[in-house]
Length: 255
Image (tube, rainbow, N blue to C red):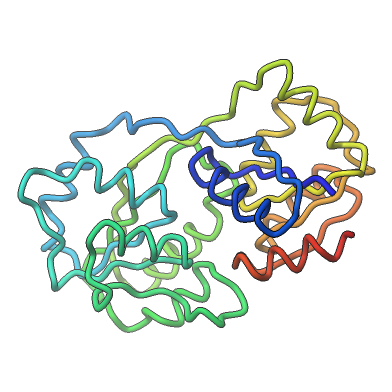
């Protein structure tokens, strides 16, 4: 059984390797291209103001990597500033960037889901009215920002100011003729698409406009992403927690 891995290139390679080690025929077709931020000066300015905010939320591992790519010389993460992560991948990226584990907040590994709602259960009460929280995100997110919008709205309702900085841009891929052919073949139901982003589903409709997905199968790592796949016309959509073990089990269920 072929698995189509749609994450951005760096993550797709890691997931492809992981799945192949477990006997799955994984093909990487990244449906999100990560581009540099159009606002590098804003990211550097955000770094200089880290000690002025009690918490920074990172929307993804890519947000962490691109934010830290613009770290000013000799800048360090303030011990008084919390780093919020919705999932294990983002938490691992923060640790790899040198943020002390004691400064990081994220849902527990056994959480039923990794999203803003679960993160809020962990961090509610950390910030007070009148304070500011910085959200590090990507531009061009479309529906993918729904969970992050929820957290921003929740913070605003608590009287907390919300600031945003764009650390990278998420764009649709430019598939080669061979990649387009592989994607069309994967629409016939013999493959399983692995989606970890609603925007990846949207980009698939851009690169293959008018494609019939009624025979296609997918595993989605969040209910919002699963609904995006159903809205796109996927015939069978299985929801999974985003952990490696849960995704592997979901994929194996299609055998």
